[in-house]
Image (tube, rainbow, N blue to C red; front, side):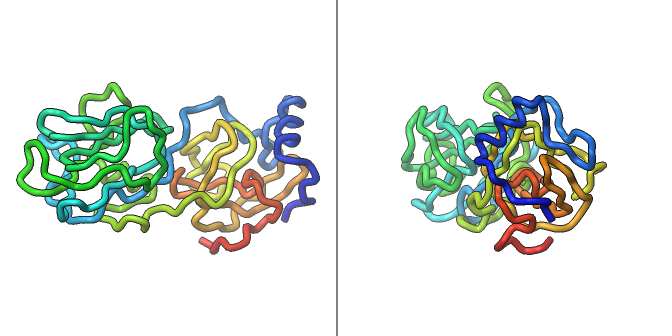
Amino acid sequence: MRAFKRSQSLGMLVATVAAAGLVPLTAGAADAAPPAKPADYAGSCPTAGTITQGWHSGHDGVDIANNRGTPIYSAGPGTVIVSGTASGYGQWIRIRHDDGTVTEYGHMYERLVSVNQRVSSGQLIARMGSEGQSTGPHLHFEAHSSTSSTRGMDPVPYLAARGVSLPCTPGSGTPGTNFTTWGTSVRVRADARLNAAVVRTLTGPTPVFVECQKHGDVVNAEGYSNDAWSYIPGLGGYVSNIYIDHPAAWLPGVREC
């Protein structure tokens, strides 16, 4: 359990830590690291349907077939960088996400977002069609490591790392955020152990979805002591509950892993 509840506001607490030159401590040792790239986002199902073609050497994405007009949703939060017509696709949309990756959507008959528009995870962006080089209504979905990549990566593990398994039902992916982390350079670990591999580093307060929590190694930081850890599927690992901005040591309403 935590030694005491916070009496300072989050802003004051972070400012105090920064001013003192401190970082969150774990078991007497710093559990911080240099800033890394933004963490993976919590994903949403892009559309409902049947996978008719997967990712392979001659196909940069997955094809998900359904009826014309089936809603298509953004796989995650980000900014629309392309929305228009394209050879082969007929119409397409590209979204740059906050982690630097890009998702691509093709063959729709109707686009509902424009370039530079900010979209949220699960937001309706288009309706399925059979435009361009297509034999029937479907979504061609691609995932790219960056805006400069020329070859799409396999979307199945890409989405799985963000809490979505294909095929999927919209609304059944990782739910919206329910907590926020605090502090900077906070490590996300592969397990609830201080010696577990670091899978992500949070560069600042981050909205997260906590799926479950469990007991692990005791962490001591800023006057708190706690052995509870939260599993965050969108980040692919665990964060000590000390770094979850909530006064309770064991988060209410969250099941045990």
